[in-house]
Image (cartoon, rainbow, N blue to C red):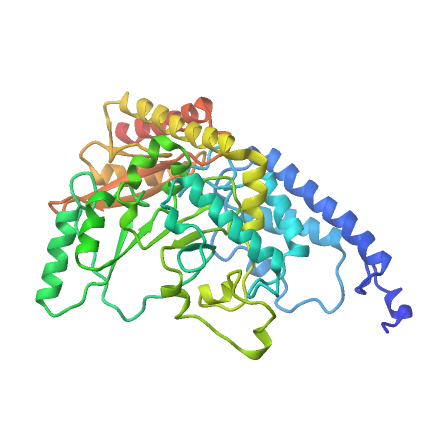
Length: 448
């Protein structure tokens, strides 16, 4: 039994299961942590989107050795504000337009809190029945929400989905294929490449089609790639990490034409539909073709009546796993499909609105097509000026963007600036502000 006299010397709480002091401390400090989070998010506009710090800013401020004695939670909370916040890149800032949407919502935060207590490690059904079965249900929900083929729904001898799977392709030559003038991979290009590889004695077996590329959010021709992969018995995987979320809206499912030829499909709810990092989902047409490579069957993993539900340890490289299905369950139920559709459509409307602003300035040109929540632009005909504009906007600090480049079919490099519609609350005012900064900095740059 834990020594109660020793317990009474602890300042804040006692680490004994069932001790009232421990749970009193937990209740008060967790409530304070929630208040800190809400206050930060409500006032995030008081910061610049990117922190004004240099590499190595934090290390000298923290002792090199761990504390020997306990530190109060109040002191830790103060150090969050004093030490950590100055180095935060504010992904939830309305003027953060880098990378992709920061999918964050309070239902997902609530799920993180509750999940910390109840979800356990779902490596077998017995290790966490609720984690396993909730993941089973939620991945089926998502497949239906996105309009994926029915063979991706869980079935005893067929397909199924998993949240946060990891795999590995190693020591295998990977070939990047050229795209057309819309930055799309076509069936003709794929077939030519396959025939070339076969002629060289190679065995093509795996193709990745991207629906919503990171740079310009272009969409490979899935309806052309699918028949080619079927013809040559090539596994066709779809990477729809960001743009896959848009398929919740039926009007964007034309990009899925050809999905009946796919063997696996992946997207990241953390990149758009209001689910906190980290959360990605992948579906397999034939689960056994994947799980057979990762299966482990030690005696301590056995339990009565196996086989009715997935044992998700066999779906990934790592053994232990944190189930993110609880976050999805909270988010989907709180917002419903209808409100998630409204949110995605609003982001796309704002991207089209920002595109119209940029097009109104004859100095700029749009790169690619604005189909989702990204706008890519450059100063007409000049990589050099575009790079300078990006660096000038970054130094200005009032908005945060990212830069990228692509190659055209004739091997020309085009450098451009990406603007992501990222904030939950993005509206015309936020887009107007971003455009104002872009034009203001461009004015100074061209004047010089």
